[in-house]
Length: 471
Ligand SMILES: CC(C)[C@H](C(=O)O)[C@@H](O)C(=O)O
Ligand code: SF4
Image (cartoon, rainbow, N blue to C red; front, side, top):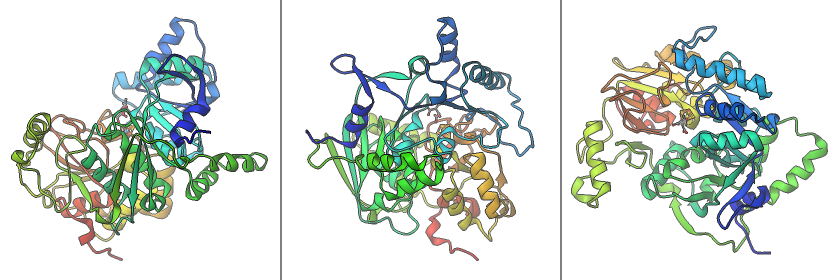
């Protein structure tokens, strides 16, 4: 048999029919939905009198528009947003789709909720009307975002017309130094290959540095791979992945377990499989990274300087850098370290999990948020929030002067009322630093949770490795 990549194996195993030369009909094991990208899809179903083919293989979560203030009952004040949530509830009830509604104790960001509740298994195809569905590659599942018209088709048929991508392999040799995280790795990768560098590809990661990552760190890596333009990210499931899945999905009955384990074993790229592109990185040389511009590839190691325009190739790279410098107020050749911030945001589907909160808390413990800085932590889900509180992390943050919020997307994209004012500069653990993403005129610097925590306590962009851990 011709050697195949892991990606090809997943596509082949889910192909129901070859539609034409380029497209297949792909079966989707799980379809996740949010309040934001599902309304028109449901409207389309009603219009055509169609029903949902496999309601049990769909799950909905209120993620994006939900307020995160620490009130006992959450009420969505904004009328159009409230309507989106009510409609999602009605639609889910009508079609029998499970829903994590506004006040559900396990509500959160869809990409945090789904894996922690054991919904994601190696070998699955998982889709969602949201680009960060690539997260699930961390468990050897092919996840990717789809558009609203596709959401309708998936609801009606549980399948999707799909044009397979090309295979990119990113190997990361060596080990990340202490204090350097998966967030720094992915920012370094995007910085080198560019925000369009993986466009048209599904990226498989391998190498000693990847094998050494925890599953939560792999979620961060696969989540942000989409910011290099990729159509998916994959890591072959190893023992770390199997342990995670079994710990989070105890319902895999003993009678299915050995078959499942045997199948997961086959989920790897065969020797000799054709790869379209390969990149190699050296983990040991990677430092904490921070974005300086308005695209995730406008990024620097913490000791780096904003590029000089004359050093950039003439054309779109230079002109977008020029525009970004104007927007972020950082001139060419400026050092990124020491840049003052007024806001710190710790959360999102990239870095809103337990390990992220622990890493931030380790920096914050025994310190205070710097004067003039507003800092908040928004856990990725109700389960993350409860686990963090059980460990006392909420007290660490609150005692330091952070706001401790309820779960949701929040200031990752400011679709609720967590919006930054014009000109405010924010150290953020999120994944996109686009113009206006966190509020009109607000400036976002992407970084790891430890780096964001260091910015909170010093009031400036700081190398977290230089702050001693206090008892
Ligand atoms: C709202 C949604 C469509 C969007 C996405 O697809 O990623 C959002 O989650 C984001 O992060 O920008
Ligand atoms: S946390 Fe941010 S990136 Fe993730 S789904 Fe929500 S808005 Fe999108």
